[in-house]
Length: 426
Ligand SMILES: *Cc1c(COP(=O)(O)O)cnc(C)c1O
Image (cartoon, rainbow, N blue to C red):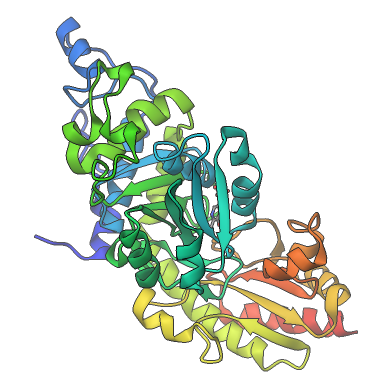
């Protein structure tokens, strides 16, 4: 029987605890698991049998979360890790190598821009930044050393929706996996695998957990990519020396990427999610659809109200008919355009600073996807090291604030903005 999303967000991956019958998934705050005998231990270490060895690789609470997220995304398997940024490295790690590149969208979370433009160079990898509305430019950026294409579904800092169908067609033609960061949309609003994504990554820190209690990430594999076809992905198609020459794709088929992520990625990179964090995230996901509905309803109302305010120059929210990306909502994220957008103020940098300092219900924080309404003035915080030109290109111009709309009463959110905008103009 195929259950609906609201049922799966509560039940997928969870079954009564085999030892106690506990209905909720227990927090297995445990490091190691006793082998039945030496033969059992050998089979586990050879990957001939699936089971628990040591919690850097697998843990029962984390495994329940992996199964839940994989189910909600429509994937074959998933690997949880310690943060969203860890998930991005874990996604790229089996595909990349020195001298190889990934083609990425210019519209990304600020931390991802830094990770891709600076830090991955230390591994000998590089990223080529392209406007993902310019499909010719994406094709031109792909060369023989490209190993993946990367974008966000609803992209930071908000209001932009990527045409995943068009991008996956390009990746397919080039024989490359498409990796989609689905953090801002969540699988309730967008299911990238249905639009051709190979891998889906999340910062579970945001909407999946949903209340600002956890740092976590996950990589979901569609199980649909042929890792052996091109010879470009030897980590998955060629013999793995650390496992007696086992070939992951040949042995595990659609679960090759997931097994590699656990047996090599977590084993050697160690970016493991802890069981307590997995528990909080499981709790959060139980109410994902309810929260996302309210995030979208509130965002639509607040963005519509702000757009008409005299102090406001513009609002970028794809849920508004005025957005250039409004027509992508029905196709890419039919249940709503999410809870994030940016607002440009006529009063410039100073008005933005006065606005964030005058808000009472909103919190001025470097986070998004919380039950609480959040705001950040990027130009004076996360993006302050950039030149004004770079700030504008990143959607973080000096007169722009990013807003993550919470699930409070919309009237209260609007009232808070109203009093703070009056002070900002003052
Ligand atoms: C927050 C975020 C990340 C990074 O996640 P962390 O859990 O903070 O490491 C990556 N992508 C997007 C879209 C995010 O919002």
